[in-house]
Image (cartoon, rainbow, N blue to C red; front, side, top):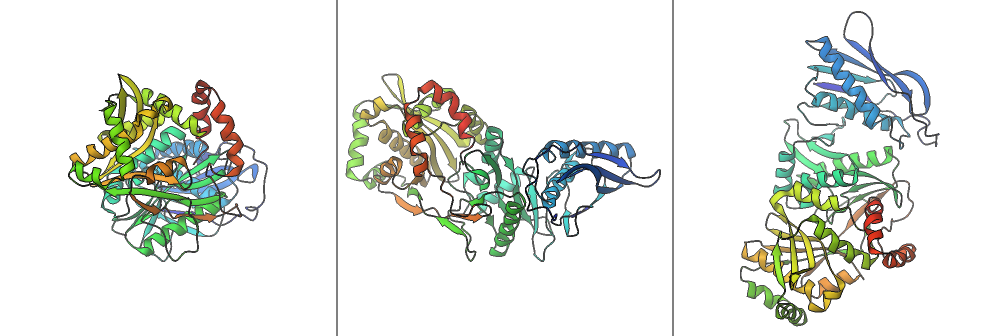
Length: 486
C-alpha cells in the first residue's frame, strides 16, 4: 500500500491570518468511469472552496470506497479543519495523512489508495498497513517514521520494557491515561525498519495551555519521557521529525523529558532544576533500614510507635483524591482531576496500586504507586497536615520500601523533585542517589528557556492566593486549571 502526500510550505505560512472555521470538506468521484476521487474544501488561509486533494482508489466494491472516504471526510472535519492552530500547508499535510491512516485502519478500507495533495510540491511517502495510525517521511534513512495514536500497544510496550531507558511513562497505559484525562492530542512517533521491525518510539502530545501556550511535550505530567531507539541514527531521525512537527504547528517549544535516554550531539537547551532520587532495594528489610540516615530512621520508628497502619488498595480513587487535594492545596498547586487516578488504575491494572496510612481508623496519608519491571515508583502522594506530627509520611514510604523488597523489587524510585522545594528536602534526607534530569528543549516561537516551575517568581502571588482558598473551591477549580499545566 502506498500513499503519496505533498507537503510544501504555503507562502503565507508565517503570517497571522484570521482564524475562521473553514467550510466542510467534501469528497466526490471525478468522471463517470474510473476510480479517481477529489476532495474539495477551504485552504488554510481562505474560506473559498477549491480542490485540495484527490484520491485514486482500486477496490472490489465502489460502495466500500465511498463509505471509506466518508469516514475519512468526517475525520478531517473533526480533527483537522477545526484545528485553530493551523497556519501552514504542512499542518494540512499532517491532518490529511492522519485522515488517510484512519481510513486505512477501518473495516471498510480500500485495498489500494493513492493520495495526492494539490497544496504543494514536496513529496512525503507514507507506507504500511493494518490497523495503525501511521505517517512517515521519505528521507535517506534506514528507518520509516510513523506518526499517530493507534499503534499496536503490545509491540510498543514490549519495546519499552526491553529498552534500558524505558519507564512506565513511556508505556501505552500512561499515554491513554493522559489522553483520556486531559484530552491532549497524541502525535506519537514510531520508527520501523523496512521489514516492519520496531526501531524506536517517542510518546508526544500537543498541549494547548492557557498558561504556557501551545507546546509539544514528551510526556505531560511525567517525570521521564523522550526518545527510545535502538541506535543514535534512529534517535536523530525521530528528533528531526518531532522538530518539524513543532515548527509546522507553530508551538512555543518542544520538550523532551529525558533521563537515561538524552540526545547527544544536538545543540538543545537543558534545564537543571529537576533531580530524580532513587536507591537499590536489598532483599532484607533490615539492610534497607540500616542504609537510611539515622534521623530519618528515628522518624520512621516514631510512626511505628504511634501504631500507624499501612494498607494496600484499602481506599478508592475518591478517598485518595480527598487526601491528595488537601496536600497539594497546602503547596499552592491545583489538584489533578479525580478521573486521572481512576484512568490510571484502569490503564495500568495490577501495575498500579493505592497505598494508605491509617491512625485509629482514620485515613491520614496515601500514595498512588506504579510498578515497572523491578521498580517501585510512588508518584502521587499526600497527607493531612494535622497528622504530620505522627511522622505519617516517613512511615508510609518506609512501608512501601519494605513492601517492595519483600516482593523482589530491586529499585525504589522516589521520583523527580525541584531543587529548593520541601519535597526535595524531604527526599534527600533518605540518603538515596540523586541524579540530574537533563530535560531538553527546542525553542520554536519562544525566545528564551521556558520556566514552568512553581518556583518561577511570576507564579508566587497566585500560589499564595491558592493556599488561602477554601478546600472545596480548589477541588472544583483545580481540575480545570491543571489541564493547562505540563
